[in-house]
Length: 162
Image 1: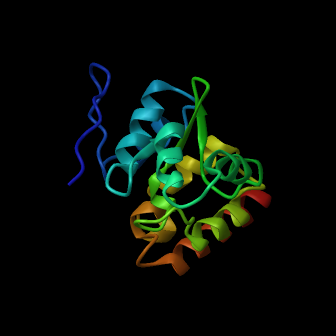
Image 2: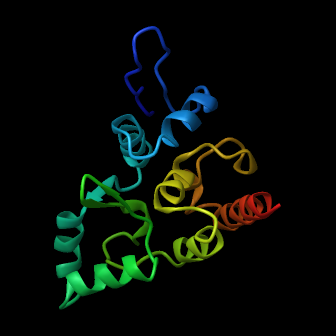
């Protein structure tokens, strides 16, 4: 079970499945300390958030030029990432276990949402409860219901495009 995020004085704590409006407001606060804490909590059960250094160490086990690979993924927008205080942060959920391969479904989702969301919005989309997924976050059902997650992304695209 997920633990609560500390809340400001007088406000209820935020936890998985609790008060989706608070989750939404918290996670969409661009580049805020509280937003980053919420993302860390949201991804804590699915690989956490990796620093650039942590990801490069992982990549070194599987390729000769990890810096080039990471740079290419970022430039080509093949991975979900965000920049916080000049540091690249990458959610671990998007990599296949025990490898440095990006899950194909993540690349499909970036393809669906990349034109309507910036890096922070895209990262938080995976963490937010989603009505099209029964109130569950895409990251929590990515493995078992990837087809529904793709449908939720397409719905988000159509809503954003009007």
